Image (cartoon, rainbow, N blue to C red):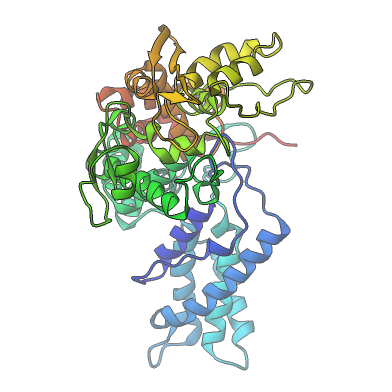
Length: 496
């Protein structure tokens, strides 16, 4: 499980009003294709030790929190209580009915650990064993046992419920979804859609989609962002806080109030900002007391791509970066890979100079026949962002020279010219290329893996549902995912 899935799974077990965050001390997750949800997460020896510590801490906590569940009523044999407790908690933690063999093993652990002490010790050791178990730590939606190798199998009802819940909320199935699984109702795509839409309305789904947008746009590392204060004197810890708060509030507004509209995310003529960001954008603050308020954007800005937090992320320490910004659009919005530069080519950006604009410096830097293949597509996109400096401040002049923010983006319908980042955002908000890319990014995030040729049918289902609504809502793509007949099937692995 990912860190978020781990925490959500723990909180589904314990009846507490204050969510537990067990993974704050875990080793950081790496990313593939921008997402931390991929299926190649490595369990290092350090992470294994941290998981053991977490299991021990959860066992101590659970022994107290779940006392009513493992404490025997007068006259009831201890092992009868223990077995009932084990069946309930293990089934919940393993996200499926627990087997008799698993119950027997955990009951033996209870007996051995509580011998000469008290039932509380048995409960603690059982909980530690459950939270250390691969059945808790790993999601294994692989169909019924005994299907054989390299075969397409249908997932069990509980596996369908688990896969659906994790795709929408990054957590285990709730009672209503489990009841549908028990009743055999999840074979129906309409039933799966009903539960998907129900879960999409929950705070858990909003948090999960927020993580998607944050990782998709690539702004998870903003806390570590640094800038040269001699070049950008406005930059400070308070500026970082304000710019990050703006983007977070805007994303959450899109998810909660605009049903996750991607077109609104890219093309909104407003944001949510405090006074510091309002003045930075050249506007009078709507909330002068320092709190966040809705702010109309000036015409040179549109949507999240022109947020200072995003523009500063895709820039250099002391200047803007047409290459980083162009690559960002290519990778994240158009789903096109840009191959790494040849080993013989210097990738050190040109030094800032006072007699040329950034565009002129980078154009000269990349005007190399070896580089032309990629930069012919990459640079025209990045140059269109040159109306913003490396901190995200709008500009028309750089070093006393007029800024040229004309650009072009190659789409499936042809090359589209534009001038300025806001114009690009408006082009992308209506582009079929983006309409195809966003469902693919959601597939990678929700399924936790790269796409393969056999996934084309499932991606087609996602794209069809996503485009059916003119707002391009993220949740609709996920509904298309869980409705697809391919979602409830898996291929078993080939023997080594």
